[in-house]
Length: 138
Image 1 (cartoon, helix red, strand yellow):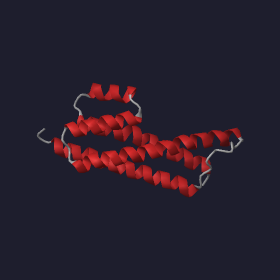
Image 2 (cartoon, rainbow, N blue to C red; image 1 turned 120 degrees about the horizontal axis):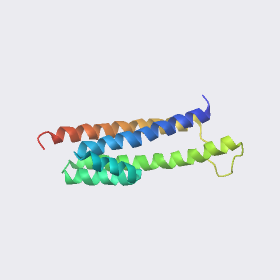
Image 3 (tube, one colour; image 1 turned 45 degrees about the horizontal axis):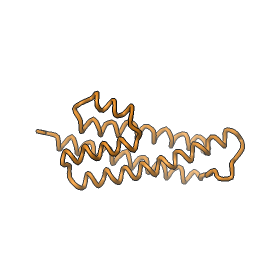
């Protein structure tokens, strides 16, 4: 496996999870589709997590769900940092000049990022299902 293609896979997978799964979780908490779409357009990813957490709190979701959201936000922030570092790595690879402060990961490190992304996705999907269950009769 080639490092560049592994980095591309991680970036693609993480972007999908961050956009799609957070959006789905927001939609599960709000019947106002226009509000959710506006939020997705104007808020950065961390702000969307903050909104998600506040909406879940207002809906009186269990402390366990709120804790899971906090953990998911932290995991997403860590993955965002890795993604940003890897974007610099890709840029250096494409320029064929490696800056001295560029992180050159191993394939195993990229696979770990991808596994963390899959865990984040599973967590967000579970929260969305929990919200849907708690919304019955809401």
